[in-house]
Amino acid sequence: MRLRLGFGPRARSVLVALLVLVASFAFVRWWDFTIPPIGRNTYQAVFLANGQTYFGRYYDRLGPYVKIVAPYYIQQTPDPSDPNKPAQTRVVQRGSELHAPLPVMLVPKSSVLFVEDLTDASPIARLMASDQQ
Image 1 (cartoon, helix red, strand yellow):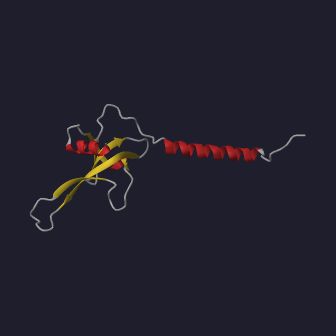
Image 2 (cartoon, helix red, strand yellow):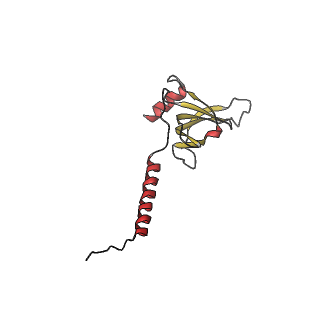
Image 3 (tube, one colour):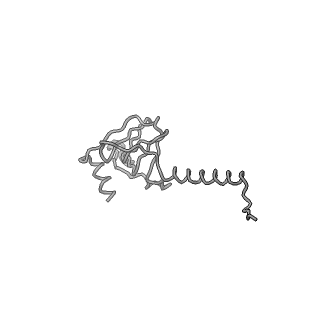
């Protein structure tokens, strides 16, 4: 006499499908689908169609989005006491805003105009390198 566990062929199929689904989800969360960079500098400037520029580590990805890691942007603040005075310019690391976003940005590829490598002598690249240490 054989002992049956109560799993029929249909229940086994559902169990296998559930295990494949969980394994697929774990794989997608682990692998970011980035295309490995070849022959480029550490930091890039990413120019967007809306006029905004972000600086950071740029990664092309499979799919409709690109990834920018540890993004920075330029912020200009006018002097309210003297409108004729030039605006004060500073480089801000994304993540210090009120909503405290994560240090990774996903940007639609359709919004990216072009990407430029920053040289190691760039003041923004040196600032990012010192912040990463």
